[in-house]
Image (tube, rainbow, N blue to C red; front, side, top):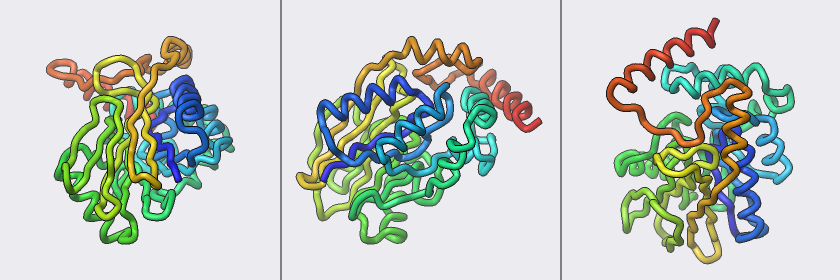
Length: 265
C-alpha cells in the first residue's frame, strides 16, 4: 500500500496540479493524504479543495483553515497569511467552507499511520527541532499507541525523524528506509509555498507501507501564473517565503498587526 503525502497546498492550484501530475506519472494509484492547510496565501482555495475532493484525498484541518473559519485568531500569523485568510473568508464558496468545517484535526490514513498538521495537540505547533519531534512522538505513544508513523506539515520543510537517525530536514529528493518496529515522523514539505529561500518548488512524499520506505520528491510548477493571480486578487505575490531579518522583521510585525486589526473590523 502506498500513500502520497502532501501538505500546505495554500490555495496554489498550479503547484497542486503539478504535484498530482507527477504522482500519476511516478507513483500511480496511491491514496492521497493532505496534512492540512489546503487554503491560505494562494488565490485558488475553492479549486484546490475541489481537486482534493475529486481525488478522494484524506485531509486534516490546518491552522490556516482554523483562521479562515474563525476558530483561531491571527496573533501568530504573518502579514501575507492574515491578508489571505481575510480574503479567503470573503471569497470561499459555501460548499468549500462546509468542506473545511468538516475536516478533522487528525486522522488514521492507514493502519498505523496518523496524520495531523502541527502536532497532535495543536495545528499551530512547528515540529522543526529534535525536541519538538520527540514531543510529537511522545504524544503519538499516548494518543495513538497503535500508530508507528506520524505525518505532519506546517513547517514547509521536508523532514524525517527516526530513533536511529534522529530528526533531520531533507534537503534533496531521496528515498529512506524505515524500521517497521520503530516509530517515525514524516513531513512531506509544502506544495504551495517553499520556505527555503531557493527556487519555487512544490514538494511531497510517497510512503510505501509494503517496503517500509519513504521517498521525498519535488517539482517545478507554473509559478508565473500563480504570481499573476495573486496580484489580480491583491494578495501578497510570493510563492517562496523568506524569514525577515533586521529592520524588515520590525516592519513585518507592524504590517501583521495592522492586517489583523483591519481583518477584525
